[in-house]
Image (cartoon, rainbow, N blue to C red; front, side, top):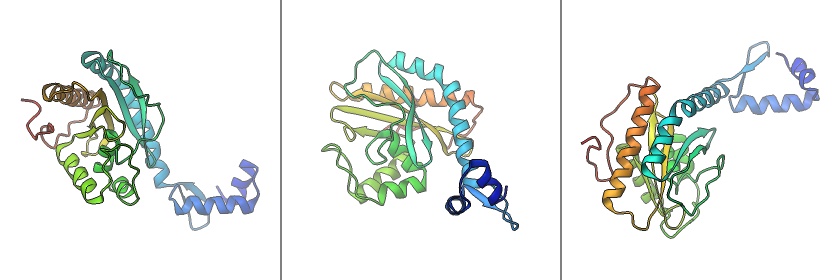
Length: 241
């Protein structure tokens, strides 16, 4: 559509519509032909695809995540990317109470939450956002040193496993693993929340192994065959053994 057509369609002044279109062009939300007809741009298409993928993964993943929460007894979340935000879109409550209330739709800290760090480790743009600003010290354990955070994100990407040891909330242990797409990127993150008190190495290993298995089950149901290698535990051992 042309500028005047768009202006009439939304009942807005031509000048205001022109300014809006220029902003959208700069953000690649729309494109313009040589004769100044405007159409949907690549970034809008990318966001739309991600939204559709998140809807599909919510449907396919539900039974696996419900089973995971029931088996582990811990709260299980599904996190997806929406623009430059990482948000929880599903929550499955476990039988063990966790003294932190994470609301569906809230943005997650890229430097302090298991799911946030996982996405930052997989995506260069999000990593730059996590590294390019002074990060808030949410707890005494929050990683705010740039060099330390960079090394942490490198480790997460290599091991395909993100851990948050009371970095986002006092007394809360979190882990997140990716649900891959066919190219090895991250389609969604499965996050498990547990109380740090009483969490020993054996229990931690159980949480990791079960969550990784759920991710692989969801990938299988979605027809994703990508595996860069066997998923790793926090100590670097093959989680399938």
